[in-house]
Image (cartoon, rainbow, N blue to C red; front, side, top):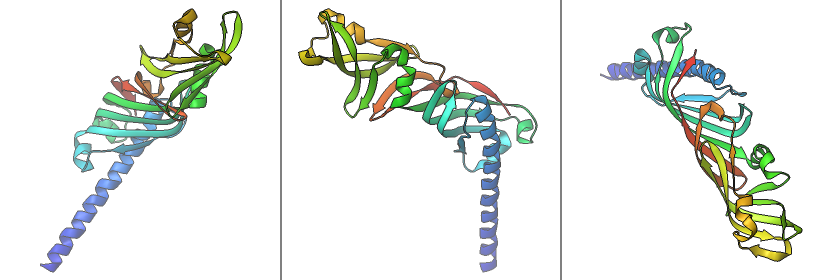
Length: 231
């Protein structure tokens, strides 16, 4: 009985080892394909969630695959962090056997983290010499504005949002030099600082749906449509 138990344990360990090894080989192949498809400057990390792996490999169908990359440069945007969750991944048998083919992804959810410096670079045309700072309690824009015949330093606090694939800024409080807090309705101040800026296509084709902030960082989140990836 003891020998039988030892044999069973050995078989289980061998099976787990084979499952793990097969998953790593598959992930390596998928990593190369996704890096090329999404035009990522740096090699991402890819992990298959489906376990045990071998039964899914046999059918070529995977429910969820995660992709993560740091300092990812793609489509003119420098992302400090990029995370994608791929749903409904189908891999043809030819691809699994090492032949050329295409991997199908039904949809993807993604988040892209941008540094404060990168956000300022992307919004440079709209800020026109001003700067945007991401604080603990919100977003601040500093610039100069003409008001009542004077050129005054403006400090505007507000929030970032998403609309039609672009980033919006909505002012909540405006302070002008020594005049202090000013009613945003005066002199059309609110409209001067309300803006919407279209973004270049986001890495991995993520369609912007939401903008969140934390000190020094903007987090863009959204979804990517179905895609077929050459492998």
